[in-house]
Length: 276
Ligand SMILES: NC(=O)C1=CN([C@@H]2O[C@H](COP(=O)(O)OP(=O)(O)OC[C@H]3O[C@@H](n4cnc5c(N)ncnc54)[C@H](OP(=O)(O)O)[C@@H]3O)[C@@H](O)[C@H]2O)C=CC1
Ligand SMILES: O=C(O)[C@@H]1CCC=N1
Image 1 (cartoon, rainbow, N blue to C red):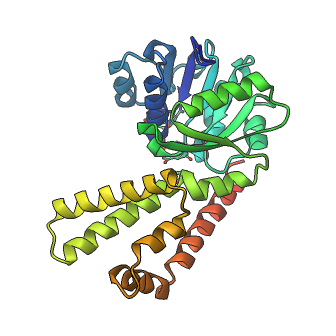
Image 2 (cartoon, rainbow, N blue to C red; image 1 turned 90 degrees about the vertical axis):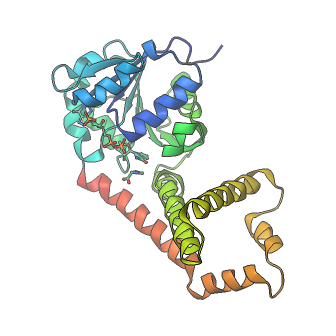
């Protein structure tokens, strides 16, 4: 028995993030017939129809996606959110609305929806596609406990889900998890390029770099040691790892990562002001 049983879930937008979250829900046993996806392009809708989900042509009948739903997930770009939701806001009737849009606050969303109260702000990430997501959630204290549990279940279908009690922390969540898979992909790309420059072929370089990042990430979760203790256990005094880490430290890679996260945080704040 799960709070998701028989719940009808509608996605407004069928892009990268919607697809990732839907994979999580289906892996958790949600039947495709209970999922509806609204998108303007026939090509996007066809992908979902092929998997036996319902679809709605957003450019023809935007309200059709929400009338019958228990949960509505807003998965469109922040820049179009206001226009998209104003096409169906007056048809809302006590459904739970979860927005995954970067930057947009629960107050912004609620006012775009004509003062609608049942709004959760979520910041997931694309590893949700393989049920390895990490999601931050925020709702105002007025949201009732049953709706909070439902939002938790929708996001936990794709991995870890954590509530924050201060909405400004959602910008930090974006910097450490929402956007962060891209930092790791960039790191892996650079490791592959580095190994190729050192003479390995691309296939071997890719396989070794990917498995190393997977193994290291898994160790940080499964080991009792902290990441810095785990790092010290790789570093023999005056050995090869020390040479590599000292090169990173002299290039202030740690400071650079912090600056990148600050840029992400600042952009998330700016999106809110730009898209009210
Ligand atoms: N990508 C990521 O890693 C993450 C993204 N997010 C957030 O998720 C949201 C979506 O991002 P992402 O999935 O990457 O973007 P995509 O561009 O992949 O998807 C956007 C979707 O919005 C649809 N759309 C556009 N106009 C409408 C409309 N009028 N009605 C219904 N659907 C519409 C598009 O439809 P069509 O396909 O038909 O053009 C498309 O399917 C953003 O707000 C982003 O901030 C949050 C966390 C991580
Ligand atoms: O880059 C973006 O704006 C979105 C939000 C978090 C990840 N992708």
